[in-house]
Image (cartoon, rainbow, N blue to C red):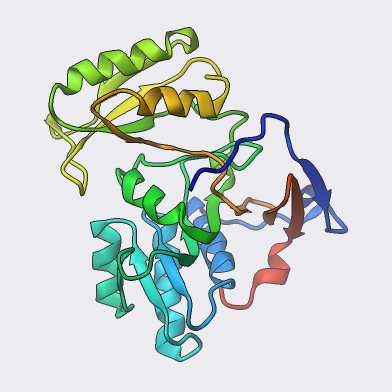
Amino acid sequence: MAVAYKAEPPVLMVSSAAPPSLFPSVNLTQDDLKKIAAYKAVEHVKSGMVIGLGTGSTAKHAVDRIAHLLNQGNLKDIVGIPTSTKTHEQAVSLGIPLSDLDSYPVVDLAIDGADEVDPNLNLVKGRGGSLLREKMIESVSKKFIVIVDESKLVNYVGGSKLAMPVEVIPFCWNHSLNRLVSLFAYAGCSGELRKISEKAYVTDNGNYIIDLYFEKDIGDLNEASDAILRLPGVVEHGMFIGLATSLIVAGVDGVTVKTKLGNDLEVDYFCYNDLRNGF
């Protein structure tokens, strides 16, 4: 599902009485923050929904929470669509009923983490290796809630100087790597084949991943996306442009929830005293 990217920043509509800096600090680990964001997202899960189950250290907490609510009887008739083999195994172990896009081509709600989030809610995903299945499921979701801790926020896609993954077929992967790097020479791009224990990392789909790194802003994301996908041998890239409908950010002072309303973003703040129940 293609969604147009707006170059201009969205208008922010703040609906809280206090900015997050006024919230009392709480001594929380990064994993605590991930769990808080995940639990807040699961509040949107209702009985009878088809849910896209994300992959990664933050999404794992959401899957755990959904299973807990199912086992308590607070949720019923949930169907999960896992975004990776790892999430499939987790959901099966927890007793979450599963299916796939062939049976449920439209997903009510997807919940997943992200490696980067820019001010327009564009994402980088796939540092965990599941970008293709994640994008397939999250692009057909009526709502897609992104859950992160505040370390994932960037000024522009690639701004963390960490990897922007591109999934490629194994055949002549080095040729694909060179072409990808050449595309973004203007942004100081470098790239490498992702490896584990000196061997090429293989995705759930049997493909390789090229990790790209940018020194500068790559500019128009739709143009960058089109250029990448035109290269033969490329399967998919890790930019999720215009797909997120909401963002939940857990920070040291509280939780920020940003929700798209047309071209605007509605912003809500919650201090941790408001969120103690269930955590």
